[in-house]
Image (cartoon, rainbow, N blue to C red; front, top):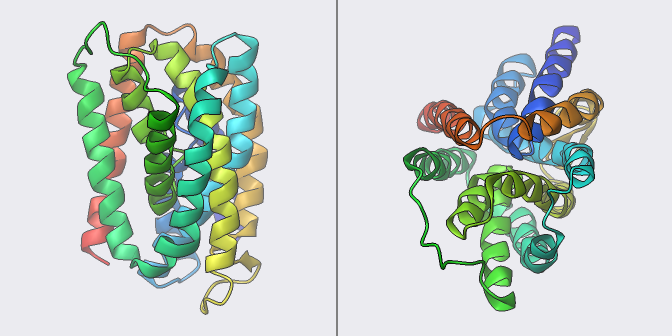
Length: 269
């Protein structure tokens, strides 16, 4: 148990920095590693390990997003108008995914969904296709629909939504630094309402370890959150110093690595 807690602390430090740097919330990085740790360290069956990793990883984003968003806001980069426009759909999609769909879909299928959409997002970022200069963010209804889509898939794979929201906002000609900052802010409602849903949908599940609340394992949640609070602001400051092209390439390479990991996990579940 001790080695698991130490590993979780280092994992939180690393993912907190990435969350601030790339606006990814940390869930994309956490889930493959937490799946391995829960399966091998806590002796959970592989499918249950995937679900608990998704739920626990998503829950940490509640704290991580607040820490990174605060710094991005101080630097004037958060598009709060976009947060307001997308938030209603994000909340609806998150609740639908975490309370209903998450309990119905097998862990192996969730791993494969995670892998596919993450690889797709990576490709879109790496190709760096230039959007039409006239393209803008959609109106209120369009933002609600986009938010719902992001919320549903974020809830299914345990990510803060950046793997969809970042390419989407870039496609709509939102500047990259504003994209990263706004994506970090969007992670909060996604994580909060999904976490509530994971507790509800997993409350009666058997075979979970001690100190579990639904699909969330509390020790991992606490250790990672404490660690990320210190490093997320550091990553946010770095995001405003690095060239935009480097941010895009780093984001894409990170997504490819995580997609490969979860593809392996899904095929072997």
